[in-house]
Image: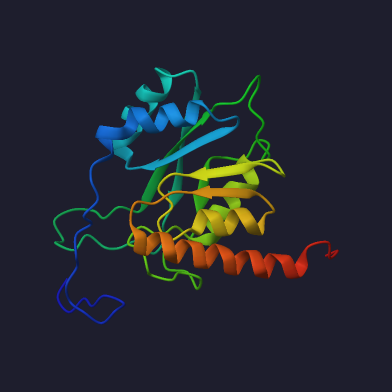
Length: 199
């Protein structure tokens, strides 16, 4: 990939420095099992089976793996194989009775640009707001509270407040936490301008 330049103008691609999720997967699933509603966890295609196993060992009901198609995903930088063109997420029902899903017979395939016009670029794994808004609409009920224990720059929180949901976000990184709080507060102010206004 000779001559490839990052959006910030540099030629250097910094690897992600996140700890592996394996050590805390069971703990995350136990949090999800205490909720009432849907549990969603983004993962690689290789991670789907491990998440499904952890969910099946919990009181939750594993439903399936869905996929986020990334039409503009990053190319395989070393050119030694195909690049990832998608990211998976598993979904499970943690509520009582039958699962309540708002999207009818819709397929679990979501296509959204990684680098859309709303991307801030402040977090290395930032999700598109439109993707998260679609997931909030499909998987949550009005008045629900959404928990994101790895909120990063807060895109899930922005989507939640724009849809009139409550939000609880957690992140260990104080820089990302502060950024998320600002983005969510800005979204709350913007959403407040249109509350009660008929479309």
